Length: 233
Image 1 (cartoon, helix red, strand yellow):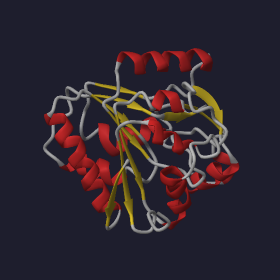
Image 2 (cartoon, helix red, strand yellow):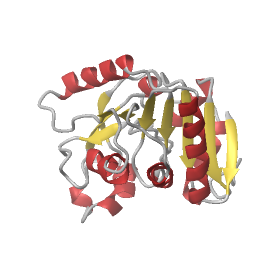
Image 3 (cartoon, helix red, strand yellow):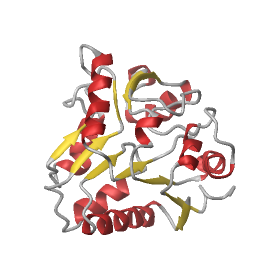
Image 4 (cartoon, one colour):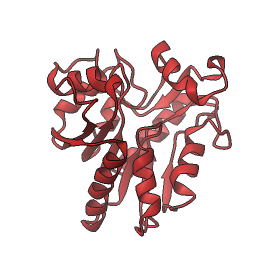
């Protein structure tokens, strides 16, 4: 694991963008993308750049069950607003949270990942160490599945909703095994509340109790953190 320390989230977004920019020069085709507040500075760098993404494919980590792309709280809507509307990609994949057959949707999504191998996977990390929506206890070889969100994750996400009762309790998420198929991982974390998770991910044992620890088994991982998130390393 390569640890890159930055001043703040803005500097972290610039660093992640530099990695993507160089990789595109080297001929990559597919980005694995994440949602939430952590990657916003990266997406700002991408939208403000002169890079052309029209030959690129993106594959997103997850989507809430029950929300369609027109819903302002959906991750499809988030990606459109923060990136795709400004920088069109050739193809963009986000799980269908309103699929009638969610198990079939999970299989379809793993087929998408197999057909479009991810060159760089962008990740955040939850306070409990989750990546994607893979909560503690998730098998480290898991594939895309319907997951139940923990109380801590629902609590963390309630700031995006009018009230906590509106936060979905399930999501379709790439599994840990699905994520690790990506050729390069770029994980970003900012703030003191991520320090324990970063410490466990980098220095702790590989365990289902902290899903991000599975990244220790990957050959190419870059971790971009500010001083607060790195404070326990």
